[in-house]
Length: 103
Image (cartoon, rainbow, N blue to C red; front, side, top):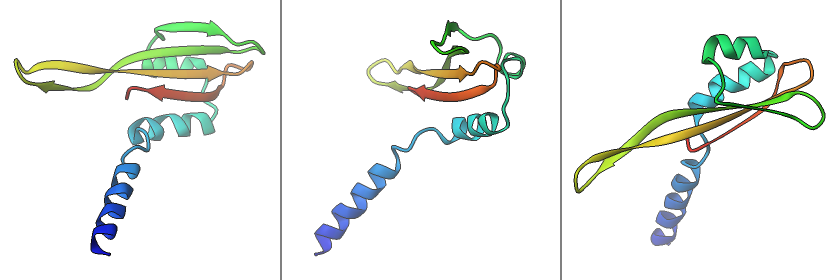
C-alpha cells in the first residue's frame, strides 16, 4: 500500500511539471483578453522573426527567443533552449490565439 502511494505521488509530480510555461502564460493570456494589437507587440517585443497570412484573414507572427539552457559534461558547453512563440491575429489586427514550444 505504501509503495502504491509513493508511485501515485511520483506520477502526480511528474504530470504537474508538464503544464507549460507560467511566465509566458502570464504575459500572453492578459494580452489576448485585453485585445492587444500588432502595434503593441512590435513596441514591446520588437519585430517578429517571421510573418504569414491566415486563410480567413489576419496574420500569424512567429518569434524565436533563447529561453535558458543547459550545460553539461564533458566540456560544460552551454546548449540554449530555443523558444518558438506563435501569435495569431484576426482581421482587426487583434491577438486571436497564441502557442509556444521549446520554452
